[in-house]
Image 1 (cartoon, rainbow, N blue to C red):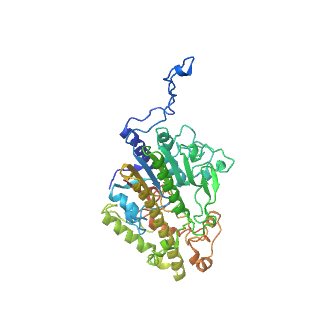
Image 2: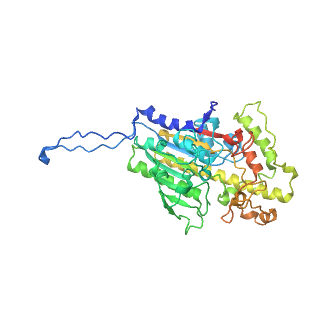
Image 3: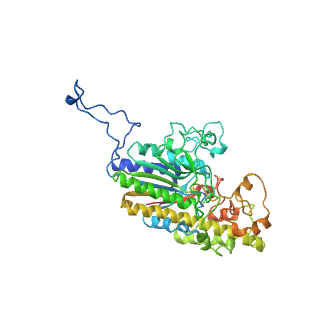
Length: 444
């Protein structure tokens, strides 16, 4: 386990080091026009043509798979002592480096802007989520051309580049089909984009964009789930890259909507956790804390923070509350394990191309801490929280079996988010405490 402090806007340096480690990359981008080295005479047969040569990556430059999950607390994954099984994350940890002091910004858009540019989020014009942008420096959400992305640098050094999943970095007023599109992924150095725009989407009925055009891949497919579709598309793209140009390295930015609300896993993943959270969040925090010490992801003398102010002890809840709240957590855990499974499918596809030993994988479990935006009792519809509309517990109880289906836009209670950030205090949005700013990361 690596114990050095490591922040999100430094992670991009590892990606660019891939170039310099293989050979000297181009120092000035865009590259100057290649001089004509042929000859031109009066007759074509006496002339020598000279086509501009395509840019090629340095010999031996590795492929790069950058994985960024959403709203996953430090204490959520089994790799870092949490209750949600993440065998893919663990497999990479067993074959790489495990970082327990990796820092994010406690909020989505800022972390993502820092990650893809290698700059402090304010320098990348993203001091806050794009929907809350203001017309002041560092907060306007408009990443100008002085803020190049790692994809642009890699593309201009001979990489194939693609972005799959969540994009929360387009200025809100530029996110329609009217454009402009220069700050969409395909304008920022990513040759291909397959995902959605904004903070979240319905995983059963998603607002999918391919390139810059909206599509509806769920139509006619009753079993559709975006998390699976996204992995399928990434697998196809990687296979195509290596089939058409085997020597050309790729940079794949893989950013699932999970585990941001709504939590929408397939039922078989939820079933694996039935009854696993009946002990409640207080006991779960203690269990996670003990595992973290056993794994060595926290020092042996660490003390567990008390329950955050405003949250209630599990033992004070009614039987109805416990039933509903446990169900919310079962669905969340299934969502995280499903996501890790689909990340594993993408990695397996790289293995099948024979490229895994020449691929650097950076797997970041969360762009910030777990989200406490689900209110104290959890939500059938996350949007009720943002609009100040209370939900009645009896209504939620009556629909408890629908939680996680296409009929809900669900989110778990805030106390579960606090438990997912064990051993730290506070959660997403709170940058003053590690619960919001520290996430597990593995590099393999």
